[in-house]
Length: 131
Image (cartoon, rainbow, N blue to C red; front, side, top):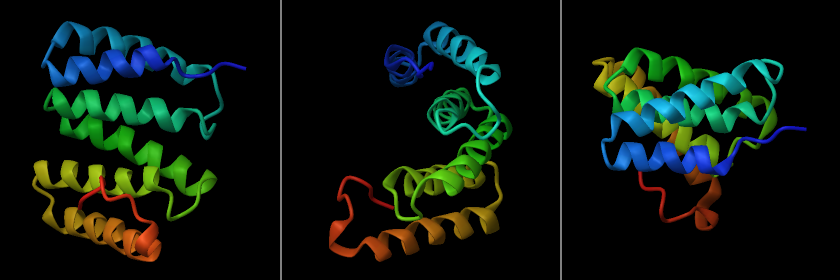
């Protein structure tokens, strides 16, 4: 079975951090090729959908970022616990995209959803995830 290569995620993160369009393009192109290798709701896809969403957000392509985030969240809601930090972070990321896109109502909805899930975790919440 295939797995999403960590070096592609690293390349995407470095490209975003350095605002290096060529690194982001290589990571985006490579990542998007994985889309056809698994069924639509395969759990492995949530990682590379997150990567594609982050790249598109960094490029200022909020509409495309939104699409990738929604695909990732649909898979996460199906395959992982509602209080999984990956899902909570996705809600927060999606809220940021909605906010950047000017949709305050949806942004607030997803910020609240993330905050509610963090409250459910209580003392078990990761302090590095600040909403």
